[in-house]
Length: 158
Image 1 (cartoon, rainbow, N blue to C red):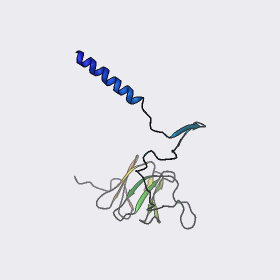
Image 2: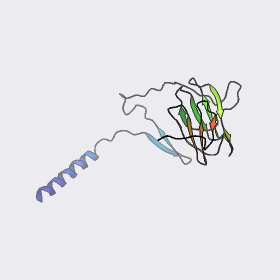
Image 3: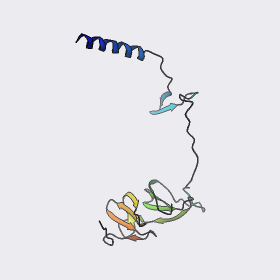
């Protein structure tokens, strides 16, 4: 019992000295108009580590004619040909872009009829190329050419 007491006291003293040592410099933090601003230090905390970003692809929100094609992107998936499908939650449609970022076409629109969406959830490509789009109110299953097959017109083999 006495040994345990000495051990706890010795450990506490070691932690106390360690806590009183030099602290590593930290970033400057200030709040301006209710928004927290964090400023980096003049010299990095870990100069041996670095991050480099390289631009691979840029998808513009406007097409070549200046028409807005992408308002509020949210869900993204890629097909087997590396076309990029982006759900535009403001326009309530799926925008398809080629692998180089060129706008190809728009799938669907807001509504409750065939080929229309209300609230899109996850999107996933099946191995056969079909796109599964979960609309929280209906199930739409486009073909590889992205033409919708309406609910009830598909089968699932388990």
